[in-house]
Image (cartoon, rainbow, N blue to C red; front, side, top):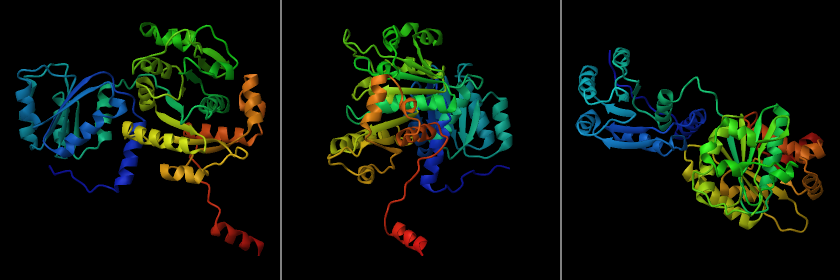
Length: 426
């Protein structure tokens, strides 16, 4: 028996969160062409949203209105793409007849996904038997679309790819690189997990100093020879910093001018993600085509800021831009660094976070002696003082960014706290 499959939706906020969670588990879609033919805006809109998702960045997507009839007319004179998505409100028998007619104009290698409005097991089996790749029942979400495409074109036997975490400073000198390097070291030492750090500041990068390394080769060789990049070549460029930590070092020289295309680092990042479960990207405080692309495509973005007005403005601008560029991903995470500098007027962590609408992942106090000694000795904070509260905070950040714990919301001191103390006093 056939019946229309529409059901009432959940709360919009919960639905959006579920979509984001579902998308986090998906791999990027390869470079394919997709054409969709839709009868309704309810299906066309999620496909258009999916086309803008960073996981679909390599795919070329075109949406047409008009359903199967328009597709038949279109492909009489045009070649078929890698994937055709068809929405149809036709009953099962009519739908099968229409698809049989369309098949006469389709290349045998073209995959077809049908989005129908009838929840019919018999229809599903018949469609699969006739070579349809998938039958999806409307309504569909943007996550459904990306998931279906991923199921068809991403090899389920493929090696898992690592998670990329991009660290960027809201302003120069806020300590983003130092935080990135120490979090990477913490992940590698706490969880015995392989971590690769890529220093993307080719002119002034500090990772080689912080890790006390002086490799002859590094990221410059990869970015200037993209045709050579594969896992074997990349492995030769990596410097071993610790048992589970490798570094793709920046040359930190001014012999060259480092002007790059927007996708200059994409191949390096893709290859590095196949070599380690965690890839830490140390992104310099610049706004260019390649830095924008790198932040947009990263699995996670961490902004480090100091509690000052210019930092707040820059953080707000970064947050707003990244939310537009990454509408289907969690908001960037915030670390407030160098809090409590003596005699410096500061914005409190609460006042800093309020206009951003987020809770800081961590507030790191100003500890010049600890950080200075670590930097001057080419050591990580955890190697200098394992019992330091700053090291404990870095370890908490490592847990959050690897999904082992969530950001802890600290309760505000106020009337509730005072009443609690009075009760305990009794």
